[in-house]
Length: 152
Image 1 (cartoon, rainbow, N blue to C red):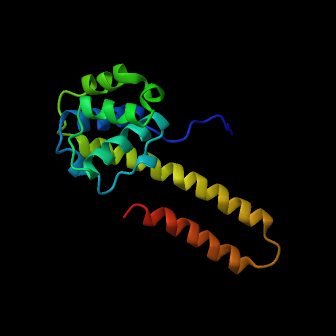
Image 2: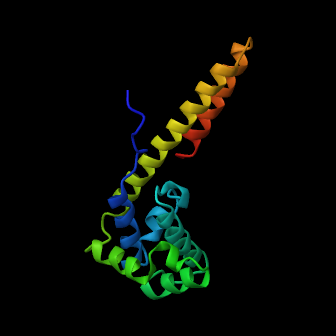
């Protein structure tokens, strides 16, 4: 059994979500109800999506100019790859029509990563437990329930 596996992720789907959001100001309405910044595997994508969400919350459009400005204002622009990377995200997608589908792919990978983390926590509980099996089961159920609730 190998332990050198990467966690579940789909970088192309992440890039396509962000590109879609940058070319269509209404696309955020299709994904903001379920997609969270921490659902993105790459931290750079988390920060770009956070900037887009912050603009949306302030009722400002999220396009190349405003997102680059927001990231620069936050001191994050260089970290995410600069304006050139934002441009590359825009150039990746010809249309935003599939943004919800791409976002569901990102969400699904995030849920799988959370399940892997939960499994590790549950295994650690089982190894550390001495006598109280019921308490371990209760805690394992709570951990899994938390993962399932984040889907809603």
